[in-house]
Amino acid sequence: MGKTDRIYQRSPFWLQNAMVSLYGAWWHWLRFGGDYSRYTEEIRQREFFTSSQWQEFQQAKLINLLRLCVDDVPYYKNNWSQSQKESALVGDLANLPLLEKKALRGFESSFYRQASGGLFKQTFHTSGTTGTPISTTFTLPELRESLAVREVRSANWAEVSFSQPRATFSGRMVEPDPEEKRNVYRYNAAEKQVYFSAFHLSPATAHSYVEALKKHKVVWLTGYAVSYYLLARYILEQQIEVPQLKAVITTSEKLTDQMRDVMEKAYGCKVFEEYSTVESALFASECEHGRLHVSPDVGIVEILRPDGTPCEAGEVGEVVTTCLFRSYQPLIRFRLGDLAAWDPEPCPCGRQMPVIKEVVGRIEDVVTGPDGRQLVRFHGIFTDQPHIIEGQIIQETLTDFTVRLVPTSEFSEMDEHDVRQRMRQRLGDQVTIKIEKVTSIPRSTSGKFRAVISKVK
Ligand SMILES: [Zn+2]
Image (tube, helix red, strand yellow):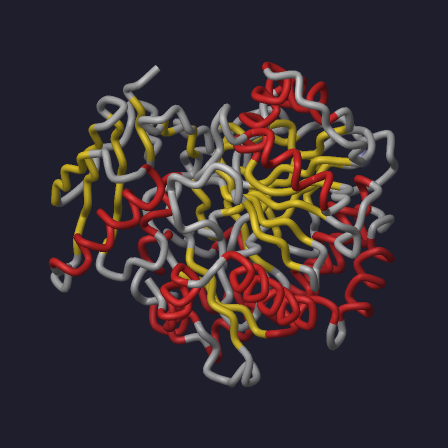
């Protein structure tokens, strides 16, 4: 846990709100500063590119990016063969090797360009839905461009904007007391944003979340799909009155038809799915016709068969992506661990951006606390744990948990203590936690890694 987190946790409620707002002001500057407006304008202009314009655009970007990799990025310089480098220099992506998450873990910096990307860098840590937590580093222009993409292709398509009041469910620990029932969110005045705690959601707290929407005049919702789904169920069960909302844009987990139905009923507005990753390795969002369009300016997305050849439209395969706008830490043919299929039907909206028919996978178990609270994306406890290679949480009963860890040689008592503390912070003190150190974590029969397994139904 960082020093700032510790100070935050010991601060009174009003000071936490002030800290959240200060942090928000910093983000506000990050988002809207510099070339942000230019990026949004360019992203908007490209939206009605024809397929051949998109291809030209991608190929030009790709050649530049691959040249940088050959000349200036240690990992590719050292690992690509001579013939692979020659392919790279002519933009022949299909001849380049696939990149595993494991190659990145612990060696993130060997993917940095040697030329400096400017003074400012922002590093994000992933929690490892696919088993391997990694960190990813953005320069300031890259961060702004990634935010601009979300504004134009996600928020604007849903007829909302990041300049409007919104609520967010994310992995942020906004309320340190796991027993808290009322103060289950914090307000960031600078961004007019309500940060919902994803760790306090239960039938008993549902009304506090809805109160926050009313109090802060929230217009739209974004964040964890499963959290909004659970809240929607409580809202319907308890017949809680929800203020008028314009849209819900879900992230992080797959949105099923059933989840969408329940949410549209509870929130009284349309629900849109966004499919992206912390690395901004790809970006897909739903247009007004409910089709999931891939943004070709964010990345080149391939859907591949096990033998490495591209899938036909409609055929499910593995998603591999080459991020085009991040050149400081380039990811070339990055294996996301997700499965998906292309949709052969063109979209009536007229955009010639490829459509993903369905993202398969990224379905996780929900953890249930002793008091009935339900928690999603629980593998967040492995975020920014440099001494854990892989981690898995198994809920045996309402109060018994097993945590399986593949530790590095530096793993110590301190790390183990940290894991226990993060578990208790989310579930309260009544739970028992068994930690098992293992050399590997078995995959499911379909070969997928399961970060969270619940035996409680
Ligand atoms: Zn469309």
